[in-house]
Length: 188
Image: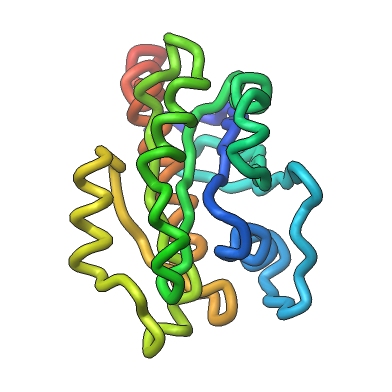
């Protein structure tokens, strides 16, 4: 078996309403900790996570978008070069998913034409608050399917549940979408 080592960088945009746990998700992913006093980025924050999948060394450049629709004119600038996206909502706050359609439309319209079909995940955060759930998992999956998300996850930044799984799944989808697995086989 030939060992293949490629260095790749993928830009991931994390978006959704305020206070759904985007910053906590990234802290749980990168720093492996939960901070109840997390201060959200003022406008945008960028973090890097490195991982290896099928001998691909990958740097995820994660852009946490934190702004209202009054600033949607910035989307095309910030989304340039995006390889994948995560729409996040709070499972204990029904209003955090009420604008999902507007978020998706704005997100997709802001992408360049060659990026319109990038992999997108829908993530319900704050799974540790499952007893206060405002949207059932079944209904969340229906919404995810309606808006053509490639997958749906629920996670808890507090417990770490499904954090790694989310980013591994999205990264694998990007590799498949960009056809890296087949490109690599052709080079052997």
